[in-house]
Image (cartoon, rainbow over all chains, first blue to last red; front, side):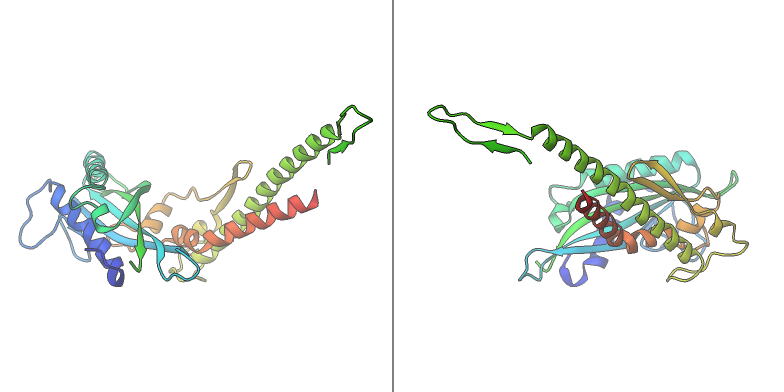
Length: 148
Length: 136
């Protein structure tokens, strides 16, 4: 549950878990290696992976002059790191579908008081060469009423 | 401004004068607003360009990205349309610097600048439009 006192970490974990539950890992992994993580990997990993990070936060207005509630926009980066363009685009599409199809209903972002999902950008960042990793930086944002 | 002329005798006769001048005045305000938006956006875009350069040069919270100065000098300001400007680079490795790659942390020069400058850009454009309207 996303709560005011720890909404930043809660949102990241919510999106990570949503993707973990609904996306199929294209490869079989050993040990405790994860497909969807919340930080860029520091050690060698098996691609593809998806990283979910909170990258920006805006709270330009409160909900009234005597109110401590703040309508806050939280921006997240969902980055798809794949072995080739086809895999990158397929995983991006799947990610988009999962986010879009889980806006309303049980267990959805709306259930967690996360509103107004926006897909802000999807930029390809490819490492050079045939063997180079292909990634897509997918920026999304949710609105959350802080203080409720 | 249009003025209404009064009645004459028993016949109610209103004559509105100055409509053409009023339309002309409104049209001129419209043009002034457009010019103000363009001037304000250019001014704000200039500020964003400078801020991106400061960020690359290591004068902001992001790590310095200067080796030969090629990236720093490549930050350009292009007019797309009236009131629409682009701060960008054509340097190939800029994306990797911005978003990071395998074993490379993102430096986010553009994204952090955008976040820092968002309110400032709004203020600059608003002020320019206000000044343009006041001049009419």
